[in-house]
Amino acid sequence: MRRVFFSWMLSLGMAALSACSSAPAKKADASPKTLTSSDSALIQKVVESKKETPKVEVDLEAAHEFFFLAKNMEMRGDQREADFFWKQAYKADPTSRYLGFGVAERLVIAGEDSLALVEAKKASRLKGKRTAAQYALLARLYVKAGEADSSRKYFVMGLDSSRYQDMALLYDYSLFLEAARDEKELVRVYDILLPKVNYISTLFQRQLSLLLDMGKDSAVVDLFGKAHEATGDKQMLLQKVRGLMAMKRFKEARAVVDTLTSAKPEDEEMTIMVLSSLPGDSAYAFARKKYFEDGVKTPAVLCFIGQYEYDIDMRDSAKVHLLQSVDKLQGQPKYANRAYLGLVNIFASEQNYAEAIKYAEKSDSVSNGDTRMLLASVYALADKYDKAFPLLDSLMKFWETWKPLPGVVDSANLVQLQNEAQIKYLQVLDIYSRALIGEALDFEKDVRADSAKKARALDNRSRAEVMLETFFAKDSSYNRVRLSMAMNLERLKRYDESFRHFDFLLKQKDFSPHEFASMLNYYGYSLIEINRSVAEVEKGYKLVLDALVIEKDGEAKDAYLDSKAWGLYRLGRFDEAYQAMQLIDNKKMSRDDVFWEHMAAIQEALGLKKEARKSYRKLLKLNPKHPAALKFFGKKK
Image (cartoon, rainbow, N blue to C red; front, top):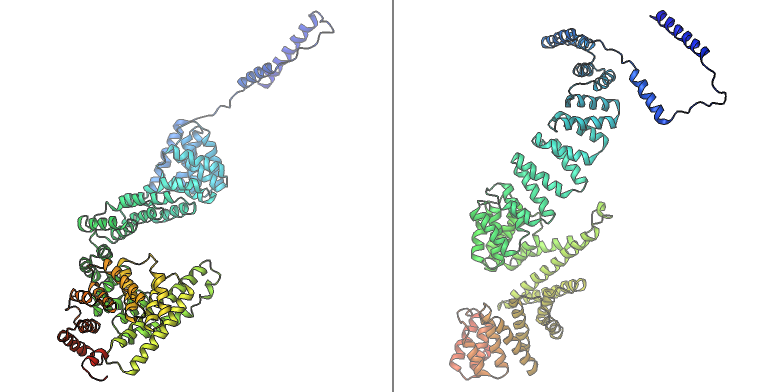
C-alpha cells in the first residue's frame, strides 16, 4: 500500500508542476487572501469529519459464550475461572458497558481497586443502560481514590437513579458524608434512610446528635414523632412530648396526650407533664378525664387529683384519693412523696398528729432529708419536742456552717447555691423559733407548771427572739416572721416593740383573710388585756370587731366573740359583754379557762352572784390556782 500511495502522490505532484508551468503568470503585487474565523471553524469541522474512527472488532458469539461460561463457574463456586471468563467476554465485546462494569466489580473483589477504577471509568464512557449499581461502584472507587467531588457526583447520580431505594448506597453515602463533615446533607440522608431501617438505634442516635448539635429543636421533636409512628415505641412519643414541653408548644403536647388510653408508665409521665402547663381548674378537669374516662388510671395521676382537691379545700375527697394512691406509689418515690406531703397537711389540719407524723416520716425516708424540716415541724405541732429539737439542732448546724464543695467554688452556679443555702438557714430559724414558742406556750398554759417549767418557757421565748432577730436582720420582707416577732414580744411583755410590728402588719396585703382576722384578734385582745388606757382598749375592741366581720361564720368565731365580750367588759359595757358571751358555743369552750375567767368576771360585774359562783368553780377545776377565782371565794393563793 505504501508504494502505491507514494507513486500516486508523485504522479499527482508531477501533474501539478506541469499545470503550473503552462499557466499564465500572475501579477507580482497580488497579495494572498487572509482566512477568517468562520473559515477556520469550517476547515476544522471538515478535518474532524475526515478522521477515521478506529474500528473495534466485536465477536458477539464469543462474548456470549464466555459470559455463560463465567456464570457457570460462579454457580460452581469457582471464582477464579469465572473472573477469567468475564475478562474474555469483555475482550470479545469491548463495547459492552455491562461487561465492562462486571469486570470492574470483580477487580474490586480481588482487591485491585486502582485497576477497577480504570476499567469502571472506561466502561462509563460506553453506550448501554446506566444503572444505580454502576454509579455506586464508581462512587465507592472514587472514595477509595480520595476524589471527593467525583464520589459525591456518582453517589447522587446513583441515588437519583434508584429513587433513593438502595439502602446500601444510602448507607455508604452517609459514611462518605460523615468523612466529609457535611452535616446538613447527612441529616437529609439519615432522614431518608431511617424509615427504611425501622429507626435502628445507632443511626437514630446519630441523627439525634446531629440535630441537637445544629440546634434544630423542631426537627428533633419531629424525629421522635416519626420514630413512634414507625415503631410504636411509647418512649419515642414520650421524648416528643418532652421536646414539645421544652419548646413551650403546650397545645401540641396536650393534643398528643389527649390520645393516650392506657396506663403504661409513659402514658402516666406524659399526662403529668402536660398537667404542669395547665392552669389549676383546667389541669384538674384534664386529670379527671384522663383517669376516669380515658383509662390512664395510674396512682400518680390520682395523686395529682388529690393534691389539687387539697389545694381547693376539698379535704375529704383529697384524703380519699391520696390514700388510694399512696400505697401504690412505693416504686415511684417522686410521686409518693407528693402524696405523703398532702396527707401530712391534711392530718395536721385535723390535729391527727399520729397520722401526720407517720407520713412525715415516710416523706423523710424517700426525700434524702429534703423534708426533714417538715418532719421537725410536725413533731413540734404534736408537742414531741424531744424529737423536734435534735433535728432542728442538726439542721441549724448544717446550714449555719454550709460551704460549697471545692469543685463548685468557681462555678457559675455558686451564687445560686449560696442563695439556696441562705433560704434553708432562714427556714430553720423560722421553724426552730416557732417550736420554741410552741413549747413555751404549752408551759404557760399548764396551770400546774412548776418554777422550772416557767423558767424554761421564758428561756425558750428569749432564744426564739434571738433567732427571729437574726432572721429579720438577713431578710425583713417575710411578714409572717414579723408576726411571730410581734406575738413573742407581747408575751415577753415588750409591748411597745410588739405593737409597732402589729401596726406595720395591719397595712400589709400578703395575708389570707383567715390569717388577717387571726392577727386582728390577737393584736386587739392584747390591747384589751393589758388595759393601759381607754384609747388602747377602744382600738383593740375595734380590731376585734373587724376580725369578726371577716370570720363571722368561721371556726374562730367563738374565740373572737370572747375577745369582743372582754373588750366590752373593759369599757364598762357589762350588759353587752354578757350578751356577747351568751352567743358563744359553751361546749366548744368547756375546757378553756380564759373563757370561764371572762364569763365569771362579767357575771360578777353584773351582780349575778349565783351564776358567777358556778363559772368560778368551773375555772378552779381547770386552774386551781387562778387568782381571780381564789379571790372570789376568799381563798389565799
